[in-house]
Image (cartoon, rainbow, N blue to C red; front, top):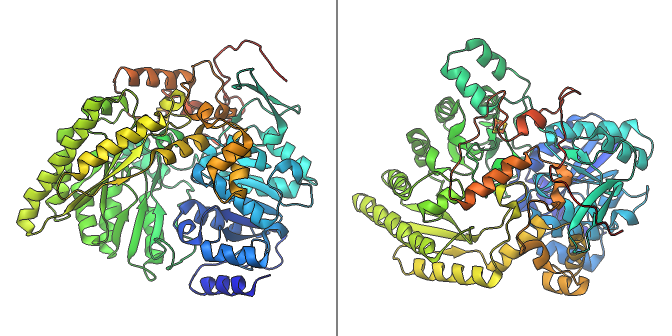
Length: 628
Ligand code: SF4
């Protein structure tokens, strides 16, 4: 074992606070984040799982990260198996290896970490002497199929519920097989890939998933935290002055995910990160976070403020994590109380339609927030295609309000390769950025300085469980040309600094987002070949375009539908059809008794009564054309 690695880990630990070490615990969990320590410590999902697992007295949970480049060289040179951070124990000696994966692009790093741990990557090659390999995190909501064959258990849903159920099942069962079967039979929250045979059609598309054991469901439901009030329900109750309802909603036993380990040397490690709400009501058709976290739910202000007050002695910086900060019905209270505590406030992302005066003032005060907003595209028509209900005039006005407060630099998130996009749409993007730049210069005159407009261009990657799930990613060469043309013309505008994602990266992301189980071979090979995806595709003979560049029919079995998102097929199909016609839809109201998209009546109640229909069968009748 390398002394240098052990020493560097101990040094890292010295700079942290909140680290938990439990000697002699009966269950040891290695919580793996498939990226470096600096990146992982900015991830609230990792902090949450660390806190939740360690809350269980019999469990000791330690963190494991992908080594950075110099650590990696040392690991390879010394042939040291991957170690945990807290006690520098080899990962292969833990009872459970639990990956928390937020981005599907980190699937490659998951395989790499298993290889570095000297744990067989393929679940079929492991026996009961090996740790149980579990995968959870936001990527499990999306499409866990590309790493299904690496994993014993995929936790589909939110950790607040699943952490305890997983640990209970491990303690209650004797053998690995019993644990797997017991969890799979719950029917919701745990997907055990080895208990399904995937049947393919002759053309390589998936025909069906067949459970191999009695009691294992055809589709696995997701488990979502039901204790947090729905955003719309709370807003309505406050507006109508329904004191009793408000009291009830605010006094549920909710969990406020927040920083568990203070790690000032990591990205954003010097601030308290706290999740104030989950999900977004707007239903932008490209956005997986919106659909996959339906219905939007909030953490009551009192819980947020209690944590903030607890941490104030340690830091004066707070990051509010949410996809829709200003949709929180109690945002005014939250902001004003945090400002009274003298916090410098930053937010994870800003939705253009919801930037309030109050929030802007708080961000100006905090000084360290660069404003990033997302017009997504430059054409009002295309914005209706993606269901982002804002016009160019509104966007310029909102940016103007930001500039008028002296914040003269904005980052603009823009997408290229959207369905139905034309050259005229791209030309409109140039005009929009030019208008925003002009508005910045007007404000800049008053402040005696000019700012910068930073358009960040990304290729659209159609995501599972969104209305674009049936669409192909824009052809790579075409996407490259569109990105290049747009970047070139934007760069001609003074005070504009363009950033651009390559078309190649968009295609790689699309492969991990939309691939089926066969893609695991590519991931395993690429992890062996230090991330070289092209060589991996060559070695495995897998055609990436089959997964990424094919429009899928409504009757095709989508590999990710083995996990039931709760979103009704008819709902997604209608949204897809409306996108083609550039028709917008109303946002999710996030109230009780709504049945619009199907999530509330079927999925989000983690402990729904038995009689409630939890799992939907696919509506599409399929013709039997099975190949073994
Ligand atoms: S059923 Fe209604 S309230 Fe629930 S997530 Fe869907 S649209 Fe929102």
